[in-house]
Length: 356
Image (cartoon, rainbow, N blue to C red):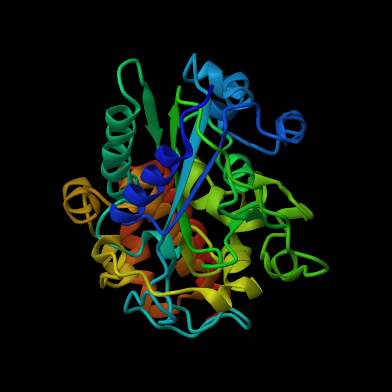
């Protein structure tokens, strides 16, 4: 016999009190698209993200994560901060045709002063504790924010929180694309919600918008081509043939998200930690040592890729949209202690000199 539905209602109420915008519940049965995930791995579309393959068995079976799991509470939090332009890094230079105004761009989720893993993680811990308190003796709960071995978007769709779009991200009919996901696995048997249907229809704007054609087919992303992967997950050199398509993006890419028509329902997030903060000029970053980088970015999503990865990206952006005023900073970067930075600075210098 399952727990009365009133507990599910209490979980929903408390999650919203914590600041989550969407709440859904589903069973801890295997996610519906497990076979597609396995095929994605077999195709090598995960690139160097080996952790996805190492924990594939757990992602296919939530009970391997929490042995007696029966239900999964899925929550979402809105991080849309308005229609303001991408962050300006103070280095507006003549851009290549089609590359905008030449300002460095950061994915919207990383605009703020604090990493969403921490913001959501603290709230999810409180939600998990609440589940255990109201569930009574023997209740167990385990929470994750984008880090656990869970097919979170698959479970979110089955819980009715949103639907997986052709760009492989979750879309909410209430909030659009701009949502963070979190999960609480529990051994309570809770009443499940109705799965969300798919509403992409014939739309293919996200596929057309991808600068590197990483969305190789509807619902299939080759991460090895994705700018978010190239600028965040990839630890080494960015393939030379893909660098021009990165344009002025220095951390992630929102192009497939920005064009989704469901964003007409996006609402401005009140969460202070997600609001945009100003950043220095691109060329200034090239003079920063590890201590300066750490002091400025610690606690933000950008801190994850460390100084070497970030300056690699800055060099690529300057190589794509910079003019001769960027050359002195790039030439100094040729003496950087990181070989990765030196190599990308050398490439950027060659690109700029070919244009001036």
